[in-house]
Amino acid sequence: MAKKSVIARAKKTPKYSTRKVGRCWRCGRKKGYMKDFGLCRICFRELASKGHIPGIKKSSW
Image (cartoon, rainbow, N blue to C red; front, side, top):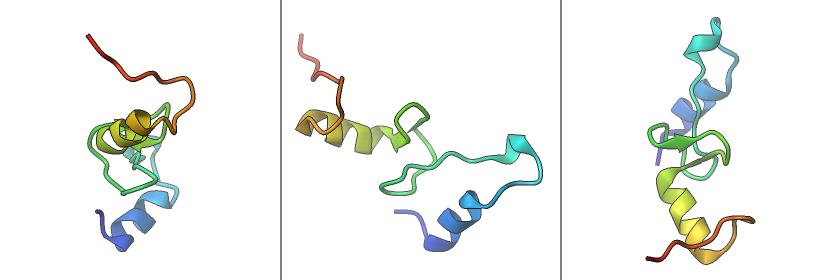
């Protein structure tokens, strides 16, 4: 879980567009962030396995 100050800093508009940091909306994690869903890989996996993300199937092989 990221600190509240770090999350607030990421929400501010940066001076340069390359400094923009994508963060998970559930936990605030910046690494493993999936832009399409707005989630990190851990939260994505939890929600996908519970069936809360529409259009995503659980994988099995």
